[in-house]
Image (cartoon, rainbow, N blue to C red; front, side, top):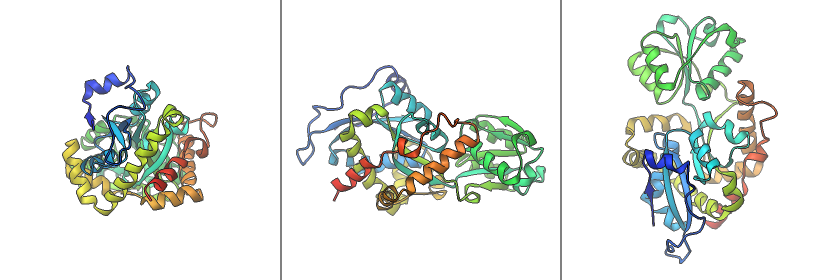
Length: 339
């Protein structure tokens, strides 16, 4: 079985050329099932993405499911959605910051992956800020288009403030950290593991807000398939979800081993990946199936989509109903196949 790990140049090439075929002559698995080709993306610095891949590789779940898999590491979600639009990627993991893209019709969620508690508003000791109401008049560094932007929006709303009440300073995520440590901003709107870097450098920094302060709005990551794959490669996607189901339940039962496997595969520090795992919730596959059936999955993503509307990332005309960008049938079929 092919497990092709693409480097940066090869990743770029996938945007220009679609990789061949939804069926393959790569052979069959031990059950005599013909292997089906699929192109899978993931974020190699995220335990949510690389964890599934690392476990699947270690346990050879791809062959078990009858897949000839082409694995493509990415650094973020939006570039995966772009690769899907070009036809070079069938499915990939994206975090909450990119979830506005499938919510606007750019791809289809085939399973939720996690709810994260790893987003923070962190105030410097010099700012004197200790609660959300203290944000007024402060310089706040925030990455545009990500979860930092969203945690800031929730905090301002909770405090009865607007962006007109603060000095918003748009920065890329690493620059938020460096600017905070250098004293150039009062507050960092940032996510794990970059938040850990702040506390390592400024141990008496103050958490002003975290996801746990807003229980009605979960920040969700998911595995998303291209709309073309939904239409033309349902068998491959169902088999991928068989892999996900087994790898997901394993990572919950043995997170320590999942972190070790992920660090070995990605080169990311194990402590960084463990820190991410400590700040999120994974659902068992049985729970995902139940949530899909009773509408809880739709409710979660509906609430999250509303946040994208609130921050102006989406307009009402662009936002789709959860039922229109989430496919729960493929997950149910995969669970049934594993009985």
